[in-house]
Length: 361
Image 1 (cartoon, helix red, strand yellow):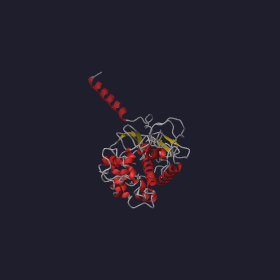
Image 2 (cartoon, rainbow, N blue to C red):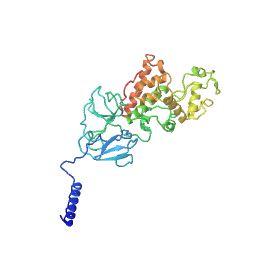
Image 3 (cartoon, rainbow, N blue to C red):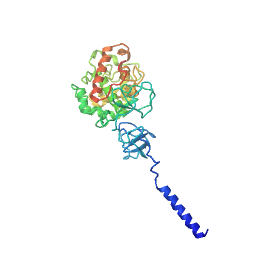
Image 4 (cartoon, one colour):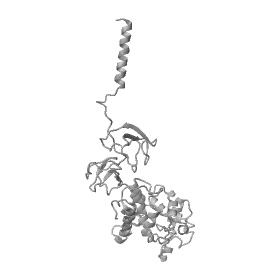
């Protein structure tokens, strides 16, 4: 074979191979299956996937509310078809055709099930088959069927609007202002800002329900039984009671009392409450901060802080135990426990979320 014919043959072969590579084989290629549809209320950590607008996406790091395709946190994994675990990238507005929830069956984060109430729920954390409507730490209502079962986002960073706050406390003392509460939030940024939107609202409702009970509906700023005032000084403390024997009575939304609590709260907040306890009844933001200090850092007679009780799924009843222990719990005063529960149930209804489990103590 001549050199010219060999060169012509090789050229034709290269062209043929190139065409074979460039022309897609439509008869055998298919799009990847879509994973679970993206949900704006779900927290995604690095490596978790979601489908949106016909593509699968992978989270590079922690994300919530950043829409795939519009934020750098999401990596495009390519087009996906309409079959598989998700809804084909409709952002959670597809049908509710998900498998029925089965009690005791293990579920992993991201699983979506249809519960007996006809609504869909997505696993927020791995769990051994907890009931979706009572274990809100493990399950979150999931948007499907063109309507949302997830509460709408609240205004600002606090999951209770001023209108809702006023609805909860129609007869409140003007001292307990909404602006004072929101100004105090910076002291404990994890408060009502941890976990799913449902958990955030539940914690806010739990805190406000206990506050409601302690203050008669945000009416009383100071303890009403003045006969107790001289009893709140523990003189055995090295710092004593510099503001006076009767200065450390209950004040504020959680009724902060005792000289050692005023000192501990003041030290944590950077305010000298040991020498100036009256600030808790004259400065609304300081008063709210003392309530948040106790809620977020103190276990009291319980085994955990009220904050941890709500975000870790222990339930509202454990917040009561952390505040008043056996004085109310374990049959100590069932009527007082029920009063707190009643307020909590009213408040979660206003916020549009379920009450969760373990309401009593």
